[in-house]
Image (cartoon, rainbow, N blue to C red; front, side, top):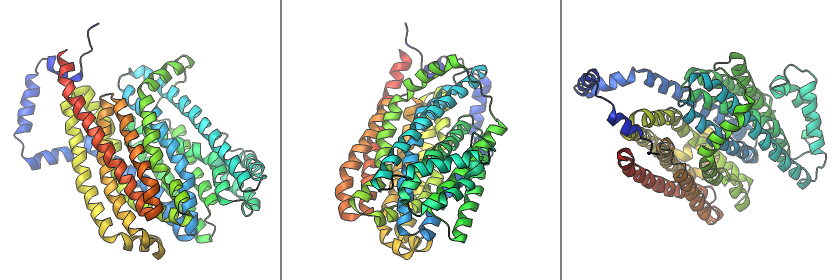
Length: 503
């Protein structure tokens, strides 16, 4: 069987369109200002702008708990919040690699008639993976219940969950969103006696899958370039969560469990709005479940393994800081991450727009078009994030004191290093998008493994001696090593591309 032609060979074999050539000549004669004006008024630019707005909403939503808990919940409470939600973020990133990324890749290769069934299968796969994650969190919660010496915590938690889901059965799909405040009242009698960490983990059994569902639906919207749908859903989360947390802070009731309940209500209402609006057709076909799973897993297995390696080193850092130092240092670390989170408004927004654009450019126009998109992303990241990193380096201590509390200013050096790490990580994500487009997921896996090895290899000695600053340096070392490796692999793949095209 002859080898399949690459996009580059397909475009080379296509006849030249005289009209297209004339259009290209006209474009070449435009001045730089005219090109910028044309790009800024295009539909792609508008979609990119909406992606930025959406990511600004998401980043603000994720930053609010750090800000309010850090100010009103006590210095150690912020560390507990970071420890608990690091598990949810880890599982959500695995689902993004295992389900959302292959969905984004294969969606454009399917006929319109089969896309509804593909989305239905992917939603079923998401439900199964979320159930497995909830069981794992529940198992760890049982361990914490016994470790804290409160053997009745599990029974009381599930009793409260039953009360909250059956007393006022408004909806069976999102009981927490409809009856969360009732569950909150039912739990008040035992929250004072059980450990905060244990209660938070038990609530994550319900809140975690609801939060992950909203993240997955965002990725689906981005795959279809439905930026308005993503913005609308995330606006609901922001308004509900901001209002709930602000009221709890005003009343002096902002605790870790209460914050988790508010987050569950906000993300649940957003997901419920998507189910009601149905912006995309969904069909569930039993015969397609296994077929679509095999297709997705064949593509994403290296991505999942790589994300487990890469994300583990980053999301496990609060736990490493806890073991090497204490909860107060974990709170300092969480405050630094929250402050640097402003950079991720730009990183996530640009990446959410550039990832499908990179994949589409390679599939339709070949590697040269893909490389142009990659350089566009790298240039944006270097200019914008480099400026943010300079501000964090110069005024990190002042920002920590103003945004949180004066005692957090001791972690200013960690903020400065994390600002530089944001630049390196963003450039690495751009290179990783290109590897995804070329289906070189194995190199992505090895790149993530490089991150894991270098980060964890440096973490314990650096954190033990320098605290939060040592944790930041270990992340920067791991991100830099991964970027160097993936850039080398991308260069290798691009050198091989002409050989594939001529085969």
